[in-house]
Image (cartoon, rainbow, N blue to C red; front, side, top):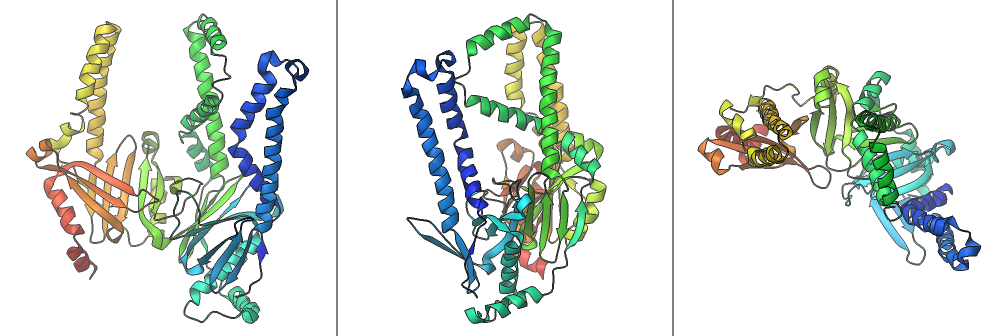
Length: 505
């Protein structure tokens, strides 16, 4: 193929600068804040010129980061040669990376607020050997849509003609014309989230905890600057207004956090769309930052359907793809096939995407005699806790006894949920933490099955069964507790390699 070098868009230098600045934002705020407001905010002349030293150091760091971003952009080039995507970067230490197109599993696109006005995209190249959590094999910070299409066309051509000799540089134009003239993929949209579903998703997402924790982390960065004594005095004055005002204030704070979480969820999942061709599932979403990820069918290890109590009550569920690689975010974030969908609408789409899987299996439930196993261990901490609270806070402490019926009712709820189903090629496991989880796993994708028995389970002929599939870096695990021992033996026998070969034949 051609040795023609391609460069990133110049805005990559600015994006590299912003990325570095984000990592130093807290130290910069502390440096500038401490020096500007130290000694009651007195002027620089009163405090001496030595106070300018940290500010000058910060300015030098900013200039260095900007120059570093420019150098990274200038030295970063990529090209196509011998069926590979080749990349060269670095100033003092020149680095090269060669990625065979056959190893590339997916190209994930992101359009941020700086990309979209210029018609650019950020491309993450995911391969079978992608290692660190959430880190792509290669990240092209900003390239045009045409350049992104060129990478995809060369990748598709290399995969379709892997048995043919690699063309020479002189024939590159003809090669690329062949890639352009190759039959276009038949991409079909199978699902697009409606505005009603988006609003229901945002209002039931539970993102309020994320917002509150983010504020707490932010404030923790400035713990040395926070005047705790003054805040304590103000809080004590505020407490004199009475319980009603305090309750209203807490409610208002939680309401604001909830509204923020709703807005963030709408921005993140706006125009959520699922499309597919013969090889991949494509998921796109986002308002301010539009993301698109492709998931190869052959890397999908299993499907998890989750329902929190509120969504279960109204018949909604979230569907997660357990994939052997790839992520929608910069962390080891699970790929949501459906952030939220009606269960009645979910099954026909899943049948279309995965026709070989059974989505409504008849589950074998846990035996009735195992019900007390779901709450018996909780008594070891509940009894001393309730006893101490009742003794020291009598008579109001007696209300702690209400925890016993709550835990027992929750255990009964868990017992009624747990179950499994088997076909010749599929294992389905269902269990409950607080949310209800159903795992659908193809037999050939299961990495391990483990059966455990405690001393008390052996006395009742019960066992716990755990199945693990490859997903991300740590894998995904489904575990059903306190099932019949015969059920555990049946699952182990089903999973034995000899039986696997027999069932496949």
